[in-house]
Image 1 (cartoon, rainbow, N blue to C red):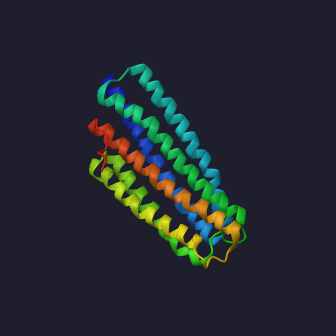
Image 2: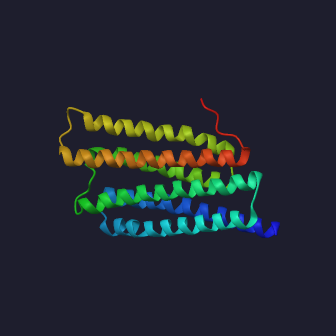
Image 3: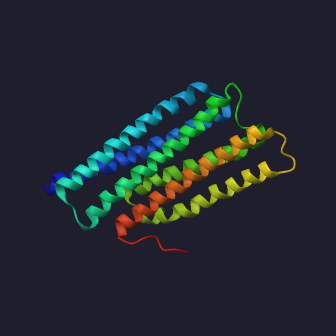
Length: 216
């Protein structure tokens, strides 16, 4: 029975890893659709969000079922409880990519991002991709060292977000209120993507060590 339990637990962890790859790909594709006014790619991201939602629902059902059948304790219980929270964060990361793609669709055939701000958005996408890659490593190997690094990695995203807001508040802003609102929301989507990744990393750290990440 214990072998069956751990096989199911491994399968659940593999599903989390799959979700992390899907949300990373979704945001990359959403950014491309945003910067290039690619309606077909935006529609692909929007449709794929339902796949991520379905995976989360299935994962939560499997996790709760396993908890009910096996009544795990100690580290196994921490792992399963953390799975529920991690899957929720990953689903939300998928939603954020979905929001980016919907902005691209809404402004098509134009790009929602002015040329002036495309470098910042490109940098935010690169920061999100790096965060997403490290998060996958954390989930796959339960790597607590890299889990702790993600908070620092997210600082780069926060700095880019501040740069974006500064550009929107500049006296030189000439792109109108509608574009300013779009960019404010888009900046928030990327910033929150990083925040959810940090939350997951902290949850993995707790799962492995039984302790919360120390406060600075």
